[in-house]
Amino acid sequence: MARTALFRSRLPSSLVVLSAAALLVTASGCASRTVMGRGGAAVAASLSVERFLQAANDRDLDTMSRVFGTADGPIGDTGSTFGCFFRKIGSWFGGDACVKRSEVELRLDAIAMVLKHDDYRIVGEEPVAGRLHPTTKILVDLVIGGDTVPAVPFEVVRAGDGRWLVQQVDLTKITSR
Image 1 (cartoon, rainbow, N blue to C red):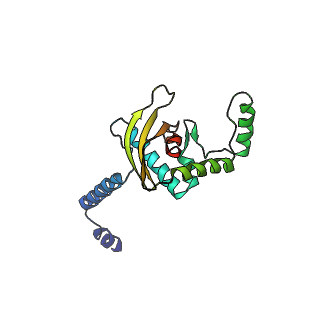
Image 2 (image 1 turned 90 degrees about the vertical axis):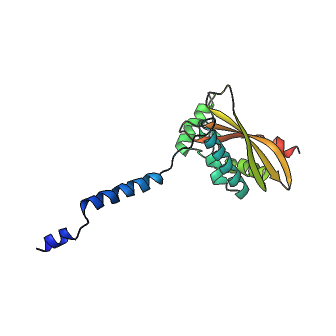
Image 3 (image 1 turned 30 degrees about the vertical axis):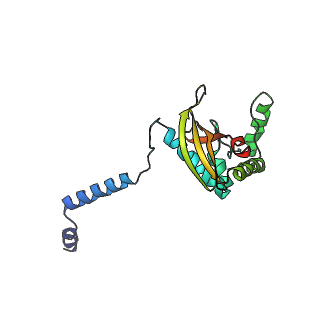
């Protein structure tokens, strides 16, 4: 008898189905997705530049090390001691040796000091021809100390895992003003 009363107190099955459908619609609306804009992947490349600039302003070297790198991956992935041993041996034959974390931080800190800005605006984007991996040049107007440094180029490369990483910044455009 108690089981029957419990069963009757449940919601009608059509209401359960509607509730489940509403939950699925809400959950799918919260899922992250890649936004493709004009030029395909340029939106994702621009977001990497924005994230890098914010991290540079905050002198957040950890975030900078995850957004800066090459097609092989972020510069912050310095590898384990065991992995670095094999990379060091490989460097004797033309490969790249591991970079120490302290050296990565020093380089990124220097970049952060140069990129310290009051404001920025992305003003252009263009594909970079002749690269092995998709590369986009993002042009950014930086406002530094009240002066605008126009069209600072950031080259952003697509890494093997699909992330877009800032590979190169023309710091001389800023330092020569």
